[in-house]
Image (cartoon, rainbow, N blue to C red; front, top):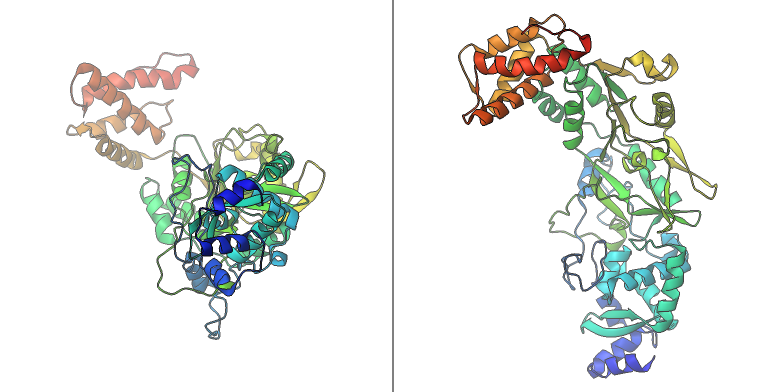
Length: 523
């Protein structure tokens, strides 16, 4: 141990020096030390450089052990055993159990030591509890890794956070700084420990065997915000509930995007996603804060044994919904390698595992509709997908998502029958009839606080539907009321829908909608 560490230790009480020596690998950990290490339990969290309070998570050095995971409740509902199991039996085979040894982790010691060094480098001087959180492994395994680093003189004990639990703070030595520089050259990934490709496939495959039925009430709630003909609303509800690929088509402006986005934002159910996957010597980041919404840990009175706790390399999330639009390119469904960070990002459809992929404006992407359907529909049908690394290796993973497409292009122009027949549900969202549009305009006036004169709604609807070349869309109600509100603001008065105000904005709106005809329409 160098002179700098010796100076730090002189500031500790005598019993503190003895514990610090044990942490550095001078003697085997005592039973008391091991018992103290067992108390250092905390869920994984994204790290940040110490010293920047805005980046560091709120954390308590000596927080209590993990509580039973919310996913266990879901498992009990979907996979309850036929025979009651003893109390010491894991809750469900669906739960990935926390690794008990380095062999269970499945990664090399060299990878784990590099990962720990990088996390210490970015964290400053982390305590053992912080390392357990950020590495995402159990206290015993993390202590083994830190002890190995101390024996190689790559880290040193800086101070104690808690004398009684042995919660030491660590920092890199000069030799450790050299080693971490080499590790960062290989890969800059410094998040929670990845799962192996085999572990990922095993857990995801088990999850996919238990279908989570969508809530009928949730679907009805989404559709209740729309004004659709009864037969259209029924078809949409059945397609969404099926969990299978569905295509919603029809003229633009009639609510396809609203239906899909409303369904995505209120998607019920849960899923499991790893922070990252390790395959062929490469790290693939899967967890994405912009897509995945973690489910908060519930407060529970009863704990579970160490061997039944969920693997903290995984995170419980609400069922994911990925919404993609016209920005999709041909490489959007492949692994994305970052040459600066030297690790991969999983494509959007893999991040949506167990959830929903929504492709809006289908047919207007940079990749052809035929190629996109081929790329997605075939893996959905067979239940697995193949991803390619830049080094040429192929990674095969289970694949299960619900694919929802929205388009205003004629279906026959999108793809041939051999691909279209793979989409079982095809639902047309047509232009509204007068009765439906009347209800739409009433709702819009209420939402936008537009006062309505007697007979004004009926007058507006009749005038719209009397134009022979005008095909009324649902969105016209919102557009016209926006214009009416802005016009009233120009006049310095409150917005009121009456014959005069409607005629004023309708003249401007109508010219814009029929200018393709080359003729000047009558007011």
